[in-house]
Image 1: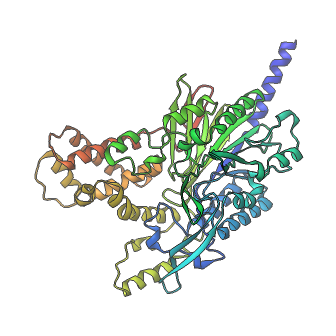
Image 2: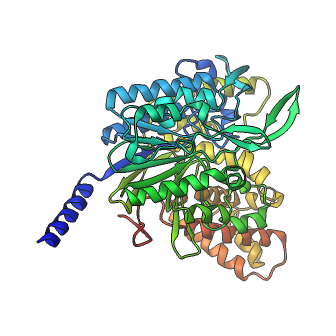
Length: 556
């Protein structure tokens, strides 16, 4: 009889969890500027097409994403860093205003973490920009003050950084209490900013904004501040700091206390039967579909954010500490990385795309059970107001022509019917103006990018070709599609025609069997190998992660 009652109780608990499967929206790297209240902050298209993020339209993208989340009746929203352009006070206050508004209107609960752009430096800074647009399309220079840790954490104090009365539980790496004797007053006292510091090196102290929160019964959100700002030099008697863009790669050496804390949290989650979902701004696993080694050999270990690729040592350390499911931003890519541990278990790292570049999207994680999660990727096609700045961009285009300056950006962007198309046009310009000349070997720009598809195939086959571009694609398209796949993974397939993929496959086959000895062929072989990695990565659009079965599978 007792056994039957126990089985019934277990089944009841399981059914209760399944019936109340918790959905959490993850919106990353919004990078907003408050162009709504300060239109003088609108930056030029010339600047946008040379940046890995937009500066203007993404303000409206954030609102569109939050409205979509509201329509889906999702109440928990995580923002894994880089909420603003560079932590400017006027942008930070706007984020606070927006999140407060959605909290009041829809009952949303927001949880943020730090990013390498907020704070850009640990004690803030002043930043001058020279590409803000005047009403006539000419440029203006503006200087803005940017927040450091203390000001940012104060601004977002109600969004995870500090304990709140409504939280069921909250702790930081520096608190001393345990779950059973949790009290808000104690958490408030121990979790204050004055208690969130560690020794960085020698006697130099730094701030860590990590925290654990239980916003609803059974769900633990673990926010890891993996940013490390190392001193670089002295200037006028003050320390000048480096940025934190390499993320977790500096944690084991400079924040070892995080690992022991994470180990304790993971152990407590198991003991208390909590569902642990870990997030940080920074990736914990290779985000290049296993192509990082080839990319480093082919293009150098300073290109394509190579220093930001986390070492296997870092991933192994956190896996062994108990982290199996980790969600990150930072890289602006849509990707799933899987790291196999020394004991055969796996760490699953989900990269949330930025809503400020190609392809703009956010993710919805559903905790189906304590060990099973489904992930859905929502592309932001419809963004009301995304074309708000188009008339000013037209003035910019005209002003540059009047000055005898040829605009470097494609005016086709001003004809975009939706936000995703606008992002794609900007991205193609980004590849042309930045990636090809700065990240690829020079022969890609000088030879491969200007050859037609027929010319490329004929070249590697050792045959003459008179055809210019009968197939409708060229080397530039190949490089754009390679970059599309790196950023958007399988989401990019909506923008790459199947016929073109088939043509690439024929080219890659010819390259692999070519006996020609030339740099063009060598570089095409590298491109072919890396392209295939990007094309055949882990599921990353709609998928299921089962930690008990230790598996990842596509969802319909």
